[in-house]
Length: 82
Image (cartoon, rainbow, N blue to C red):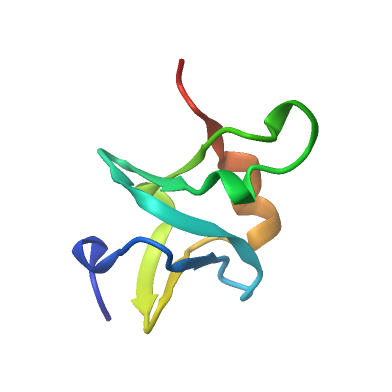
């Protein structure tokens, strides 16, 4: 089991169910910043989203596993603060 300090750029972020949630850009404070490529469509497209480190469960190889399933984790995503 690895800690938050093991999170690195370009790691996949997956839910507890193995569903891809995003790709790590970097850790900022108490949040994982996802790459813009995973920002979605419409008004979400082209800016970063964040996932709270409170949802962090483990680092498994090159994947960051969350404690919530993928469909639940995306409901906790925050948009870039501006």
